Amino acid sequence: MEAIEVRGLRKTYPGHEAVRGIDLSVTRGEVFALLGPNGAGKTTTVEILEGHRRRSGGDVTVLGEDPGTAGRAWRARIGIVLQDTDDAADLTVAEMVKHVAGFYPDPRAAAEVIDLVGLTEKAKSKIRALSGGQRRRVDVALGIVGRPELLFLDEPTTGFDPAARRQFWDLIRALAAEGTTILLTTHYLEEAEALADRLAVLAGGLIVAEGTPATLGGRANSGAKVSWREGGVAKTEQVADPTELIRHLVKIDADLTTLTITRPTLEDVYLNLIGAGR
Ligand code: ATP
Image 1 (cartoon, rainbow, N blue to C red):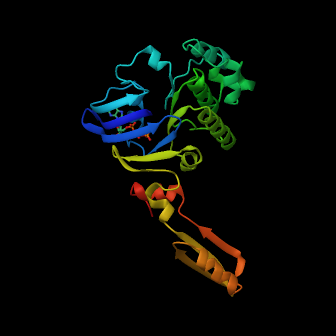
Image 2: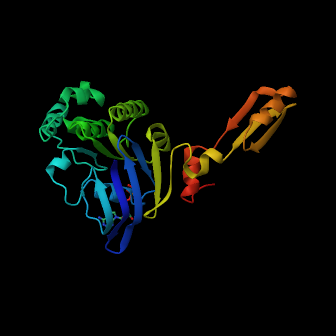
């Protein structure tokens, strides 16, 4: 059964059609990433799926219910990390996590959640005394404290330092391994590559490509650029499959210490898809 099923979703704001008829399926247990430039319609889509925004048209089913009409029991099964949150700054981290845990029937222990997001040392600090990245980690803690079946993460790692981002990736992998379905938006292509089983690219309110990180936009068939030096001269060849060329280079005793094989990164493919490729 699908965790999320979207058919012909549309959203029109006064004077602007932000989502123009998209189809989307996310299977239970999957990590799905929604990519796209600023203003593409990602947050609008995610907010509709969360039941935080009304749609203008189309069919949406999330955990078997229409988020536009689903009630509290449904809400307790999902976790949400919004793009912008206004933290209750006068509470400590532990107080805030315990407070939100109280809304759920089977929450995780506050200390466990705080540890999972790497804030144990800050548990007794007031939220307003935290750095931007640390506050974002509180947002993530609040999103997972209710042990959600489905977790929505809208640009979850904005402001994270590289070590915190890696720690967050481990957390997402652990949640996914427990069977949590995860829908995330991100502008970090390496994040999408590290986490997503599948991804979709949204541009101008439409899905322009969908696939796995390895196959998106024909990436798997896009060949490789092989570079090496031969007799002190730099050489480069673009090939579909480098095997034969490498055999040849070995045979002619080329200097393989200079050999590089590069393929398009997910970012290269993405930029091409949204029409910003070089
Ligand atoms: P970002 O990457 O910047 O977060 P996004 O893909 O999440 O962008 P959305 O926030 O969904 O994009 O916005 C899609 C479009 O709808 C944008 O052009 C935005 O200006 C417009 N929009 C969003 N919210 C509203 C609103 N409440 N009223 C009117 N227009 C809106």
